[in-house]
Image 1: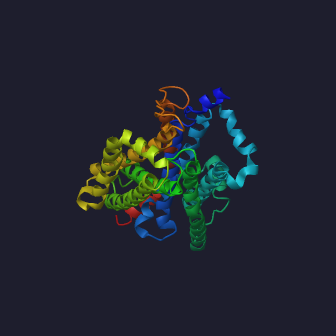
Image 2 (image 1 turned 120 degrees about the vertical axis):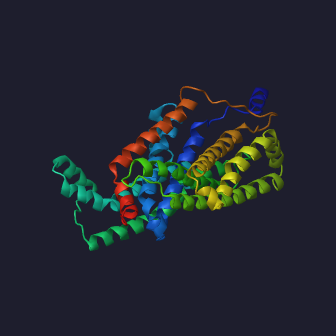
Image 3 (image 1 turned 90 degrees about the horizontal axis):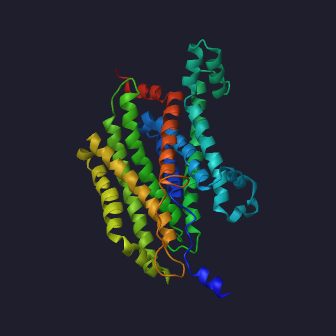
Length: 389
């Protein structure tokens, strides 16, 4: 019995490593990209229509790349089948089980919305090509609907609007459940708060908007007919990013003020946790990665400089990744009953390592170019940017 008590007094090795914050970052950025695409498809914001399809495809790519982190975290990829075979009896109280269904339904919905959005472009390809194979592919992905008329376009718009309306809460749930997974864990004081899903969603809007600002100019400059970056769109997105940062900062302030002021015994753990790296957290996560980009976003003169906007967005995206890492990994470093914090250094190679994360980003970049090569997003942009030429 004494041996058991001694063993329980030690903080065990953390179950989650570097793969999990990377997974959280990808799903969150996907939700943000989908919401931005919905500004045009659902809320009728004309100014976002040129990038709506591009943002929708980015959301799909991010979500397809994200689960590879989970497979790597399992150590044995064959274990992924267990997610689908076991544990359904606990579905009402299992956020992980909610995630299984969400990770299936959400990308399917995005794919269908993208196919509907680009249906007329694929019909044009079908009518122009002589290749039977390409004709078969176009016929399949348009669901054998090869009609081009005002009535057919209205039907596409209506169906896209419905899918967008369904997709918004679905996108929020896909990333919200990741915060839910952390928030329900009683044993880790840094996680255990009902604000965790909202906090993850707020920071996700920051990283997703930042990623879009980074990627969009590259594709506009090098992979379109007009070969020009829409600076007005970048300024608009930077202002949107700044407002998302304001929301993120407010929710973080609420989270920390409640956690470290009104918790009973847990507040002392959290105070000790933040005291260890308070200067780095304030300087890096808040000042450099949030407040400075926020100032740039609200300043129209600064945000008109493409290089400044891209650098600010890169910093934001990195800052949210660091926040995910410090929350997931840092939360597990807080001791249960023993003194001292558990130290963690990710492996350079192998599973759940730095190379794993870099490889996942490689998968994302590969998927980005493959999907963008398949879908005629550039023709959609040309429609808006070259109509006056």
